[in-house]
Amino acid sequence: MTSRESPSGSKNDHWLMTSIVECRPAGRFPYKPPTKLPLRPNSPYHLPVNRRTFLTTALSGATAPLLLNADAAPERAPNQRPPLKLAISTYSYWHFRGPKTSVETVIDKASELGASAIDILHRQMAINELGQLDAAAHAYCQHLKQYAFRRGVALACLSIHQDFVSPNPAERHKWMAHTEKCIEIAYALGVPCVRISSGRWKTIPDFEAFMKARGEEPVLPGYTVEDGLKWCIDAIQECAKIAEQRGVMLALENHWGLSGTPEGLLRILDGVGSPWVGALMDTGNFLEDPYDKLTRIAPKTVFVQAKTYDGGGEFYTLDLDNARIARILRNAGYTGYVSLEYEGKEDAETAVPKSLDRLRTAFAS
Image (tube, rainbow, N blue to C red; front, side, top):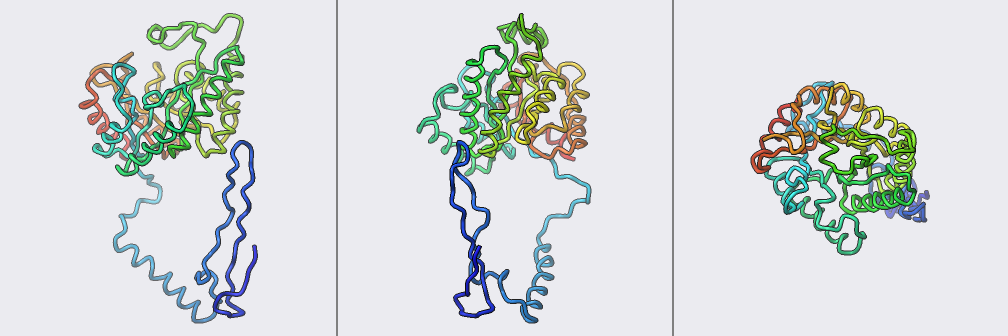
């Protein structure tokens, strides 16, 4: 950092010129932000301190709150937290059956219904899920970013699929590369969070049969749960390095498989040990004794997907007490997004608005 005489020529009136550090490659991503920014020559922070400037600055600072408070919002009680922000998962409008509902359509719905954000299901995007992140995919991401911004809707999460539970290193590396590509998609979209899964043993290959078995399946013969946990921890640790460099949180969901229990989810998170990896709480994925289990993962939670089942569930139906879940999250200090993930058989056009209203009531206080 250097200082020099101001353009006015005063020997006492100096201003600071900050030298911006040269950007050098750091790991796979070369960008390194400047540590400080230059201040303009007439910045009040560099005026010489004398009686006149001291009194002027002090008086203006004292009157500023009076001016600001004229139109300020009502003050909150000291310990009162703001209501959690509600989002809508694009999955709410497309349950992997029939023609996809476009991401743009869900952005429009969120804007109309007053939701703060959307959670994008990667498989629902108009790009090849397992394809390359090419120029066309980048252009599509920029289009979605602009489209959402112009409608006042944030892009809060990108929900992706992968499966690290395999004894084959090549298979695990394939999903690691896929996850790193999706982190780049999130970075291009300006999305701060990516939902990830651990994967499962796949000894019950058909997912609907897996659901009928209440999400439980035998361990792959010749291996143990400890083997599977290590595969997941090692893979997510590598992905977390890229996530940190891109400023993207990874949120591991309680989504069947090894992360489908509080014990498995917390073992993986503790094993990874990265501040860039937390839990994604899906309120409908603990089929028995959900509230005790949700309480256990709440302190690690960085994103929430709240299930509703109007018209009966696609796979099963849970009668969830959202007000109780809201208390669990508040008690854990959670202040992030709650994204509606509607999974019922009623038409989303009527079910999503009703579900969103119920969540507003439950999470309002």
